[in-house]
Length: 112
Image (cartoon, rainbow, N blue to C red; front, side, top):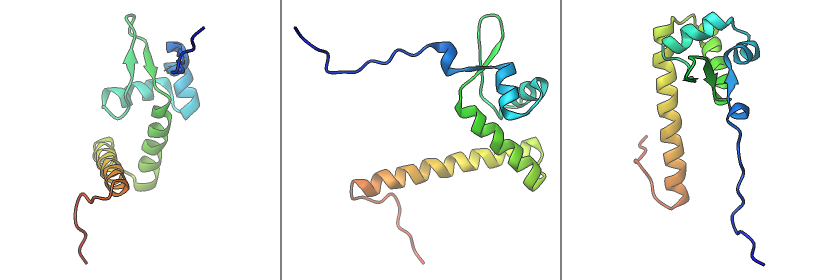
């Protein structure tokens, strides 16, 4: 008798993604508003062959961030897109810096 050394977890597509109505209810926005955010490129969504939108769970946090930026800084959607892009880039650089430190290197030299 042999046993597999790798644990395999089968994921169901419908469990991983939220439909438009469920996503909109979870983030407290009207479904039309959510559609607008997708069209503007602020939220990522997948569409099935019938055109229905499906959202990854990570998009819930992104929608919350969009709402905080809109309410807290009175930014328009173009400005929110710029801020989200910059925040994503900062997060990537910080992750790369942490990885480099873990292996004894540095990505850049800090002065001052």
